[in-house]
View 1 (cartoon, rainbow, N blue to C red):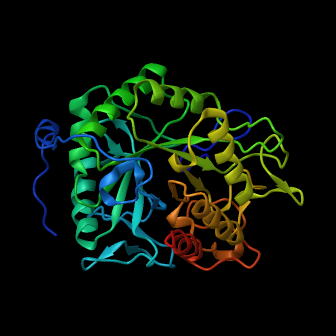
View 2 (view 1 turned 180 degrees about the horizontal axis):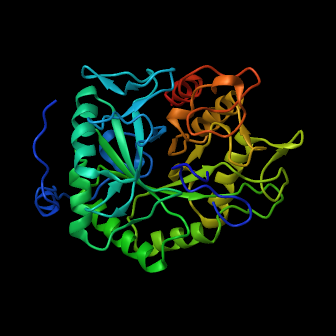
Length: 367
């Protein structure tokens, strides 16, 4: 996704209104609540952190951000509208959670791709809490790096976005982090997970979906993240696979059907490969496709793929299903099939606005 603030995508070569004054990060750290660790890997209640199934589309916070107020918005319906208006959600009924993307920089001093973190939080945390919309704070992404060198910094980071609707933290990690930075981040997350057992900790990494028997999946960065997670990370976690941008339609990359990568079957193949090769249970794996035309333009995730994948995720009782991204869930004006951050680029019977959201959300909700 060159040029866009997308999750860490993997190409086959080797990548993937009135509010209080802001608190200082030291003051924020002091008010963070400490509690014990609990939960198992099969429950699905609000108190079990990593064990809860979540459908939460990614929202690029830099798109349709309300000038002045910094309230989150979208133009998916044709005109910019806030995601919360008069204390109510304006999102389709199937959206009970949203993943905010991306916080970057050092924990406790982070920004939202240059947007002041305190101002952003003050504009959106109370609004989402009042509207009853759950949210996940996602960090890193294709164009950013998130680091955390101290427990105090992590506490300040969590406290800034804390509310009953904060259900998790997502760490999208790419190849620009050093091993030292990854290890330090894992240590901070492990400590934080013990203090905040309700929070769901997810790790977003790139994958292939080899169907040639090789179980090809994670690249070198993904393997480093998984190894660090097992050495230093929290006991309960979710691995979020970016099931997109596989490259040319060949079995070393994906499941091939009628000369193309079958995106739903490939997503499930990627999950199986990671589960079998690295020993991660399907119950700890969730999936994030890129709806519509991917950056690798021959990889196209259709509405039929969405229906099929939602059914597979439900059947195998996986940890969650998301997609990149909320703002792309609308047809492009003029019928263009060029990849865009604000439309899905499908031209053949182009799905209307919110089609992917309603389809995936509706099917996922039947668990």
